[in-house]
Length: 211
Ligand code: BEZ
Image (cartoon, rainbow, N blue to C red; front, side):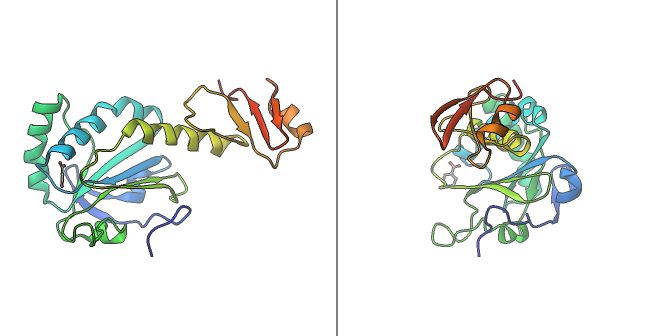
């Protein structure tokens, strides 16, 4: 069965462009984004990897390590990095797994045979400090992902891990948030000293608590 939210992210040791990496040791106490692309030397993937590299400061700010993967060998990844730097203006600054034998791709269900039986789809797994899967996302080969959205979800995950809140539609860091329905009004007054607006008993809005 496909990996689901809350499942333990399967651990592995794999060869990458930064040497051999064990996933759990590499992530240590931080967050991780493991993502696959269909193939090296392909156009959409080239734009994606350049964009992920340019977001390095954003991943770092969130204590998040990024790892890429395709079923191409490391030597191809390394040659392709020159093209990515030349065309996208950023050199890949995160490890890319050379998963030619598909070990990791199979572990994470990144090959969807009815879409393509030889290439990985565009999968994303956000992994929390507890090593559980916090987000899964699957895009087709023809559609590049929006990595700003992945950052936005990580912001929400990190906030909601600390406070009894959830984040509404199109929320971004700094916007108002929703108080968890399980919190009584009495407790909410203590937990959210900036106050809250009750639109419905189940819909109470408060300023983001850590801003
Ligand atoms: C691309 O990255 O452009 C791509 C890769 C595989 C299939 C289709 C498009």
